[in-house]
Length: 108
Picture 1: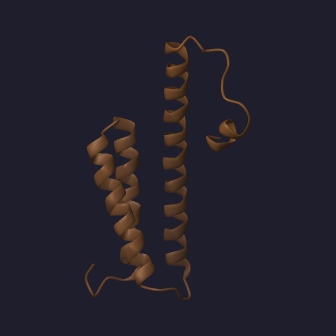
Picture 2: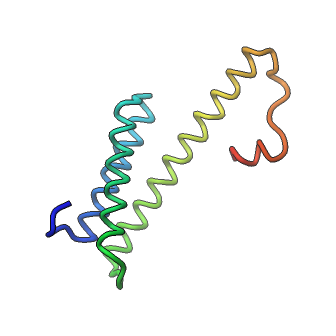
Picture 3: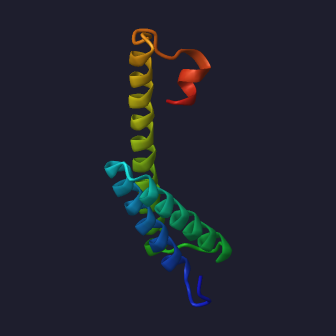
């Protein structure tokens, strides 16, 4: 992080990293996902380091965009986890049982 980085710059960095995460998830590219996640976490650290304060409409819009993209990433990960669960159940001959109770809620 440079000393001239602003909260806006840091949020843009997070948004760029989230776009890269989504692309990596779609492509099943683990190495790209690791890079994008590291970039995202560095961007989040930069935002935190720059402190809090009043957020104007521009910062609020960027934060909302980051939240929307993060939600998209969460949905992709949950879908991938559900697909893996189904495949494992099929391989073990347990395709009809599914998860119940607390375990199912943990992956909802």
